[in-house]
Image (cartoon, rainbow, N blue to C red; front, side, top):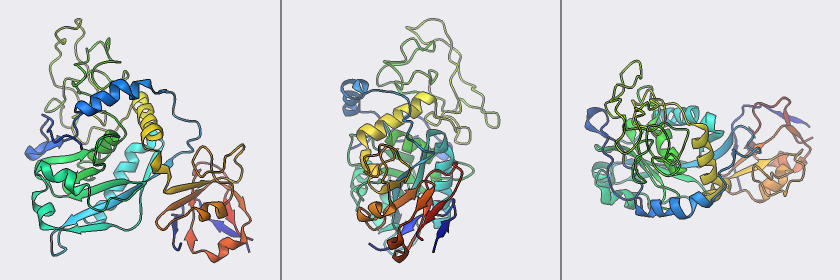
Length: 366
């Protein structure tokens, strides 16, 4: 018997420190935007390690999009009450994926939700000494661990690739909605080594961009940004801040982007990663976070010259090979083709299409 799989079916196989420093920007209702700050360790990483990498184009093997797993941790009170609802969680993933489609990445929930029923984390996680402790609550390997909790001071905070402990803290109120579709993507951007567009730890970027490779956010196709907090018009997303030239630079005035996801523009205005930002994220993924491919097994029966190791660049040639390496909670994504593998009929699973934009279908079993 041949089994045709719908291209849009979901896949589930059953069986088998960041420094605790606040940024200066204030968000609505007095809540600060983001607590992700490039401290001394990150500066050293940037200067000695990241700059030595080949910042080439996004790899050609990325069939749109590659899949990245997120382990969801939801903090509730000690009686199991409160916490982010599953409806709000779905919304958070929707907006995250909407923002990241331009970068060729798609995120999915890995395994079941992990609930943390603890009054201390639920009521006091805005104390910075608890952030890194919370990030050590049952983190899963090979995934991005995201902890959703209440926080009266921050919208989010992320670890950079070599800071520790690893993971993202997300405020429930900022996790993803029509009023704030961008903070989750902003923090994931940090996770892949993007800085704020107004970063000054490496020195202030001149509005002309003359020092863009060594100052600011280290990305040359993001315009210099003086910090957009309270400098963007509601409704139009127009820049309303000062046009002055930066002292020590030439006379070029500021003309920042109000739509960049790594800025402190209004939440509803941010929806763009530049090409260089996308390249930087891919460099961080491949160089510092290759474990994010461990939980997703790529299969393509038509791959030419594949090393058959299950990565997007070297996918497995058969679904059976992917199953050998499969562990509970993993995801298998399959390129279009004919997979005549009878043993699969005994496995309970749904198949997810890897190459969603390609013609044809996936046929498994006979």
